[in-house]
Amino acid sequence: MTGSIAAIGAGLAVIGVGLGIGRIGGQAMVAIARQPEATGKIQTAMLISAAFIEGVGLFGVVVSLLK
Amino acid sequence: MVLRRLLTLFAAFTLPLAGTFASSTEEHHAPAEAVEGHAATAQEAEAEFNLNEMIMHHIADSHGWHILDWNGHAVSIPLPVILWTSNGLVVFSSAEFHHDIEGHHVVAAGGLQFVNKHEKIYYAGTEDKPIDLSITKNVLALLVGAVVLLLIFFSAARYYAKNTNAAPRGLAGFVEPLILFVRDDIARGAIPEKHLNRFVPYLLTLFFFIWVNNLLGLVPFFPGGANLTGNIAVTFVLAVFTLVITNVNGTKDYWMHIVWMPGVPTLLKPILALIELIGVFTKPFSLMIRLFANITAGHILVLSLVSLIFIFESVWISPGSIILTLFTSTLELLVAALQAYVFTMLTAMSFGAAVEEHHHDDHAHAEGHH
Image 1 (cartoon, chains in turn blue, orange):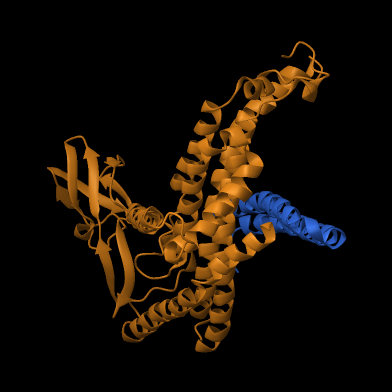
Image 2 (image 1 turned 180 degrees about the horizontal axis):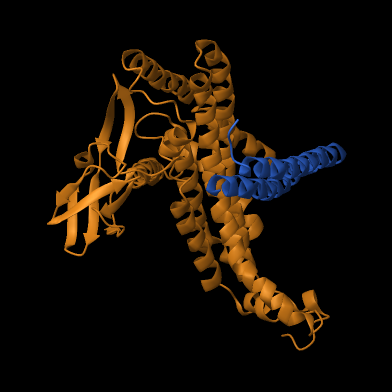
């Protein structure tokens, strides 16, 4: 097996991102269930925060690309 | 209302789906056959399949537009190489390199000699580079994207000029909900009403530029397929636009909140000023990295899944590979729109923060401010 140790780092970053986005998605579900009439606003806020967190994971990917 | 608009938007994304899929599976078959046939005829000559090299070749910019391999011969569109050298402007066709990117093939032009080392042009035998102004693959893709955008919006504009009060139909009917989405759902929530009309044209340009070029990047055959929005130079320029427009439009309040934050203890103010000043640059920086990394990661993912066939060297992998590629491509269609939305949204928010006027009662506790 050959490979770059950077891949492990990217994998670790993805764990954090997975937990983060999972939490956002879950909490958005709870919020929508409580207040279905606010669905649009919740979705917008959910997408924005998910994009922020996804950005962090992609920093990991970029670093492992640069190695 | 917002939900309905979002649904319309998603319906719009799924429209081009069918076409893209049909073509993406076709395209992914073509290189497979070419590579297999080639391997059978010249097994010794064919080096081991190098995943890293293949992916990097596909996502990087290049001086020629490689379309496919036919019987072991590359079919590609040569593009002009334009160099600003010590002898002035030198122009020649990238076909003169004969697909050599290892720096072996020397091209003589304008009284100088050049080699192509991994798509960077050097003076032959030296480590010096001329200034490269070439029409590369990404530049051509940018021009194609611009033409597509102009065709769509000029035809929509012509329709509105002719039918001022009629319900929009055809292309105009397609772009109107999208334009309203950008104006009402992205810009209006972030920018104060007074300044809205000043920024909406730029936000519309930004949204459609990123979205259309993301989609063109997903089209696997010739006019598409360049990794334009996954090129850090392109996203850098977009981020610089956001940085400049935000700070040029910054009001007194905006700058006050950066250099001397009202409402916090004086001792904290210099520390906050430092953080806020760094923040001025990190926000566009993260915009740049987010778009670049998202789109590049998407391209790498699709290429890796297709490459599974070559890694395992078995046709039985291909059904799985195609299904996974199909799934990823669908996801990428969503990501293409989502990244355009997020980039535009965050840019709108930063414009909004720049022009926002704070009222006195917002900072009733702020001493010496206002």
